[in-house]
Amino acid sequence: MEYFAKAYDVAVIGAGHAGIEAGLAAARLGCSTAVFTINMDWVGNMPCNPSIGGTSKGHLVREIDALGGEMGKAADRYTLQSRMLNLGKGPAVHSLRAQIDRRAYAGGMKHTLERQDNLDLRQCEITDIVQGEDGLWRLTTKLEAVYTAKAVVLATGTFLGGRVYVGDVSYESGPDGMFPATALATALKKLGLPLRRFKTGTPSRVNARSLDFDKMEVQPGDDRTVPFSFETDTPPENKVVCHITYTNAATKQVILDNLDRSPMYSGKIEGKGPRYCPSFEDKVVRFSDRERHQLFVEPCGEKTEEMYLQGLSSSLPEDVQLAFIHTIPGLEHAQVMRTAYAIEYDCVDPRAMKASLEFHDFPGLFGAGQFNGSSGYEEAAAQGLVAGINAAMLVLGREPLVLDRGSSYIGTLIDDLVTKGCTDPYRMMTSRSEYRLVLRQDNADRRLTPTGYRVGLISQERYDKYLEKQRLIEEERQRVAQVSVPLTDTIQQILTAKGTAPLKTGCKLEELLKRPQLTYADLAPVDPKRPDLYAGYIARQEQQIKELRRVEAQRIPADIDYSKLTGLRLEAKEKLAAVRPENLGQAARISGVNPADVAALHILLESL
Image 1: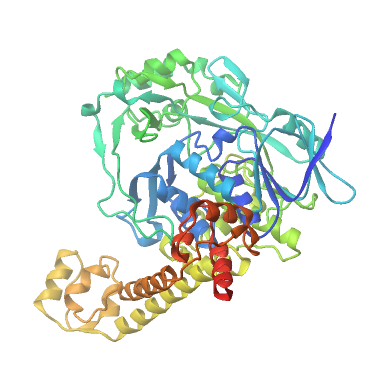
Image 2: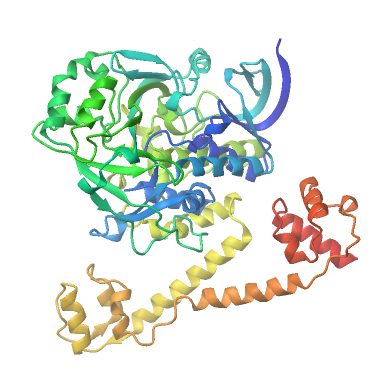
């Protein structure tokens, strides 16, 4: 028998990368929010590659962070190895990529959701969705609980009508052996959403102890790492190395001998696969003139021996997978821990949505991530953030957030989806943006942080730091325009070493910085009056230390009764009563006591 469970402002179906950002955004904007997931142990799961970022995707992560999203901060916390890609090209296409500890990341994201005010994380399967005459969305679970919401975000990933293929074997399933959302797929079709079938795939995972790394190339992380988040103060450390190996003629022959056993080529899989991330058998067919393909052997975490074989996605039978894996140098004795598979799933035609990601014909219903026809964790998170913001805007009676193509890769991604649609899983690339020279990952904060602040996801403290950073940058731009560089042996040696033409006469430092071969750091020897770039940060930290010491000095009476204090959350009262901090600074560092609690406690102490 059905029963009414609870009413929410915003409900998010799915807790992958899109669902996480959607739920957090809505809750942080003050909406009562529910995030529903089939399995709470797989929140923020990475069912494919254990990495975040990469070409154009690193831009998306920076933009998510600049708007107030969570992915960048979480990626920094759980980075195993960090590399900046495309350094041989201009800064517009420099892209950060990090290997991530996938289980630590998932656990961390789950905890973030659990600790978020205004948000309930709930394990259940949504089996039906309808909109009532009152405009409220009615969600029914498999256990017959009924929830209502003013706005709903569909972030179902590859679960919706999921079916896994391995050779001749196929069965209903979500990714990583989880349950599929079969009933919800039926309900959405009944609702009238224009669904279609896409497919994606993932490679095998192998045991590191069974590999011969001496036969592979080592791929270390960068000596100087940089974080994704503008709020991360300490750059992540490289904890592991990756390896590179190559397929060969024998590998290719195994594929060609068994193409008739591939569900892709036998017609069993009807869904369109990702154009820019083909299966290995597809690469062999499409690039038949190539005798070898590069593979990356990547760790999945610090506390597992699982290694991810990037570039070896397949839906061939298990015995064929074993045969071609064992032809590859270093993998001759590889023990396969997880078999590669293809997964077919339902997704929507994104042209049915507005640029706010709300459906034209279904007020209050939003889509995000792979449900919208995209591929990739970063693309999903970006859409989830926008969908969550706009679900909250709808509830709060505010104008929706619409990012245009000139503002961001996020705006480009969404505009492409809702305007052009896609016939296969959409992947973000720098070439998709006509404004890519100005949409750099290093200036994402300048482009989007004011927007995040206006929306309400960027705190005043963070916004003040952003404004100070911009002030320092502008001061330095003006100074550089006035600095003269005389014709000396030093500058000529620098220019020669960097492969750029020597000077014929002296010039302004600004003119030299326009040369693509030169960086700001390269010209330090001819710019002796250059300011300490960290001076502003050091001064601010010194001020923060003074403030910390002032707060530390504010004593808390030993006999204070927290239960009688108004303005504190129940959790804060319980934690403060249990720890009994001696001063306000100590109280601020207690887990479960947030800045608002500290501010309220400070006011209460002042009145004592």
